Length: 615
Image (cartoon, rainbow, N blue to C red):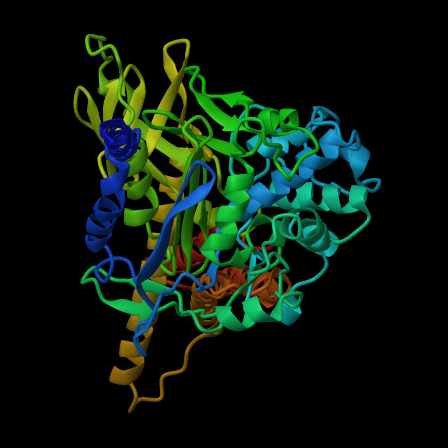
C-alpha cells in the first residue's frame, strides 16, 4: 500500500513539476506565458477606445492558437463589438501570399528568382524602363526594381472601376527612376507585377491561384483576395458590417470618409478575412520539426523563402524573399498592412515557434500594431555597451523618401514627403515628426511605439542614404532644394501679386462707379491675364482634392486640359499686351504694373512645366 501511495505521490509531484515548468516558460521578452494574456490585455487598454477603435489580437505558439482576443468596436455608433469572426482587411500583409505563390512556382521549376522578369511577360509589356539592367523576381521581392511611387488608381470607390490585373498594370505603370538593386522604394506595382507573372505561369487569375493553392489547402474558408470579393459572398457581407475609423487629436473617432474602397492592384493588398484564418497561414510558415508545411512539397523551399536575401548597408538583415526582417531580441519576420481604413501587423519567429497577429479597423494604427510585437519578442539591444558612437550632427540636412512620385503632376506631392534631420544632441535627432536615438554606431531607433529602426549608409564619409525597412531616405541635392525654394517663392509672388492687383482694380472700379471710366484695350488684356491666373491655382486645389479621394487618372484629364488652356490664354494675352505696348502711351508706373502682371503669369506657366502639372 505504501508503495502504491509513493508511486501516486511521485506521479502527482511529476505532474506538478511539469506544469510548473511549462508555466515558467517565458516569451523572448521575459513574460511568463501564464501571464501573457493579462499583459496583452493591460497593454491594449492603453489604446482601445482612445486611439484605436477595435482590434483582434492573436498569438500562435508551437503550432496552436495560444490566445485570440477581441477588443473595442466594429461599429462604434451601434455599439457592435469586435469578435473573433469580425472580417478585417489585410492590407499589405496580402503581399506575403504573392511571395508564397512565387516560391511554389520556384519549387516546381517554373520560375527562376534570378531571371529577367521580361522573360515571363508579354513582349514590350514594360514601357517606362530607363536602364538595361535586368529586373529579377528578387528585385520585386526586395522592392528595389527602381520604380517611382504612383498615387493614382490604387484605390477605387466602386468595384465596377476595378479592371483585369493586366489592364491595371498598364494603367498604373510607373517610371523607373533608379537602377535595379540600388535603392529600396516600397512598390505596390512591383508586387502586383509579381502576381501577374504567377497568373501567366499558372494560366489562371491570380485570385483563383491563391484560392486553390493556399486558401483551400489551409482551409481558409473565411478569407478572400478577390478584388471585389465576389468569390466569397459571406466574407463580402461580413465586411460590410465593419466600419473603418480615423481618430483626431482629441481621441474622437469618426468613420473613414471614403467608407468602402476597392484595390486596383489587388495582389498588393486586397485580402480580407478573420484573424483565425490568417493564423492558419502563419502556422503553415512555422511547421514543427519533422512536419512538412502544406504550402510546399518540401520544407527546404519554405526555408529558402524565409532566409535573408537582402541586407542593409551596415550588414543587418533586411528582407527574406519579401518578408521584412524585424529587430527584436530574437529573429522575427514581419509584414505590416494599411488600407484606407484598416491596419494590421503579421510577425513570427520560426525559431521560437511564436507569432503575433494584430488586426484593427483603424487607419494608420500603430500603438497596438507595432507596440505589441515588442512586448512579446522584446526590444532589440546591443550586446556591447562600450561602443563609441559617431556624432549625430553629421547626419543633419534635408532628405526625401525614395518612395515618392518623380514624374507627372503627383511629383508635387513628393515634395511634401521630405524633411530635415535636426540633431538634438550627439545621439539624437528629430525627423519626420519623430525622435530617433542612436543605439549602435549609425543605427537609430524611434522613441515612440513605432519601434522604427534607421540604418545609415556612408559613402566616402558622407551620408549616401538612411534606410528604414520599406524605403531608403535620400539626401536632397542642392539643385533640388534650390528649385523647391524658388518654386515656393514664385508661387507666393504670383498668387499675392494677382490678388493684390485684382483687388486694386476692384477698388478703383467701386470708387469710380459713378463715373464713366473705360479701361484701355491694354488694361483689359491685363485684367484678363490676372483673372486667368486664378484658374491654375484653383485647378491645382481641386486636382489635389480629387486625387486624395481616389479619382482615377483617366478622370483627371480635364484638369490637365485646363492648364493647357491657361497656357494658351497667357500666350494670347502676352502677344496682345506686346502689340498694345507699342501703340499706347503709358506711364512708368503703368509699365511696371504690366511687366509684373506678365512676370506673374509666366512664373505660373514655368511652374506648370517644372512640376509637370500637364499630365
